Image (cartoon, rainbow, N blue to C red; front, side):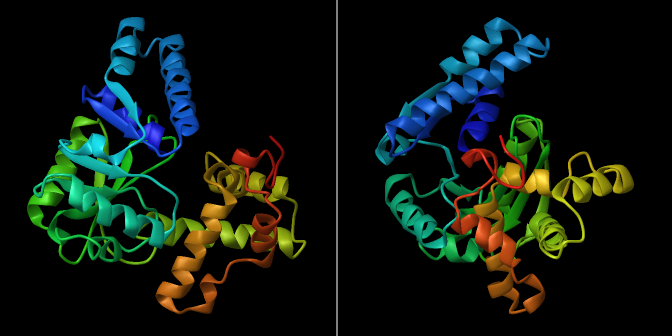
Length: 269
């Protein structure tokens, strides 16, 4: 997600500093961006010159201090509340006081992240859809103390990126995952209970409900560990047993079958 967000900003003409503590991840991110841009060139949607200029606008760094003079920050680390809170607390001491700190979280409460800073009015959610360079929607999540001015900045940036922002209240799962994840979880239950194979479930949803991608293929694409984390946030946030993760999902994540990124999930890659 981080590399896709960086690419989208760079393609829109922004200078981007992509930060990760692991140099190997930075190399992987740059290679991923290069491949993505190359596909745009192959399809005639981007010129070779635009590809080169986009790459030139992205620099990679291993230290957060590289963001000291940043005008806007988007966090896209692991979907873990403690890790995100720690990062937001550190970012709060590094970037200028007026800078908005946005999180690409798909489920963690914005209020939880804002509380780790001294600028809760300048903390919001900016939940991009994956793959970021192709997907138009961005959920803009307003925390309890997020100011109107900060939300306007986020909406203006989305427009500059060629994306459509939709505002969501700061509730577990926001809009997208409150609707999507229970559906994916129920699809997993259908496999768990022997109602149908993954192929059968996906085919029904594609041909019967006109979904472009079956829910289990989508789960593999998102990452089964991420799906599990979001279901736990929904369950804990609402205190409702209907959001209990399917035992099959729990088992697959425990076995390291995380989907595309691990080479195996409901399908092999």
